[in-house]
Amino acid sequence: MAKIVIDPGHGGRDPGASLKGVALTEAEVALAVARAVRDRLEAKGHEVILTREELGPDEYLAPAARPALARDQGAEVLVSLHLNADPDEDQPGMPEAKGEEVWYHPTSPEGQRLAKCLQPLVDQTFPDEPFRGLKASDKLAVLRGCQRSGIPSCLIEMGFIDNSATNRQLGDPEVQQRLGELISEGILKYLEG
Image (cartoon, rainbow, N blue to C red; front, top):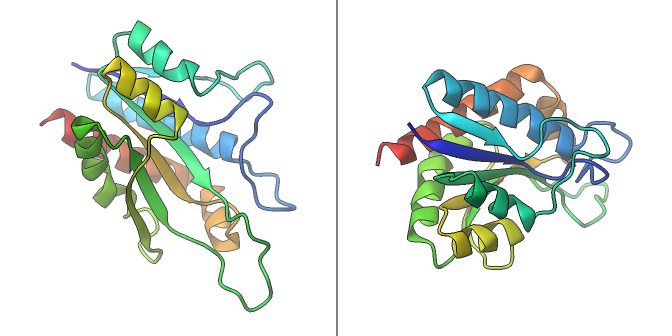
């Protein structure tokens, strides 16, 4: 059975993105989804390590340190969970950004294969929203560090937390559970080769 690191993005003093005036944060949703992924993968016999277990102020591991944790634990794969936010101010009559995307390191064929296994499942979470693409970047610290350590990895942007409709759904524990189940299915598909 595989050893898998799930990285619920942000945490500690860094709550990540949010919708203005709404208490729900990226760190909180990412942790809930990570726990659901862990539970599903452990039920299948895999060992799962989360890069953080709580929301408290001391529960923070720098993005560059997360691949080192995966390497030191002998992980076979790392998946980092995040939520997007549109940097522009929403203007009346202008559409809000929405949709999911999956990132991988451009020089990692296994990272790209992992992303391809996750993409159709991640896209099922909000089927009425566009899938924004499989995207390659060497600028994301988690992906860069995993590539240097030889660990297949990807980073999932599960939706736009600052989209009012998506935000309402992301706060629902059933949606968080569903996200976790879909992501775990993508990881299992990758592990099956």
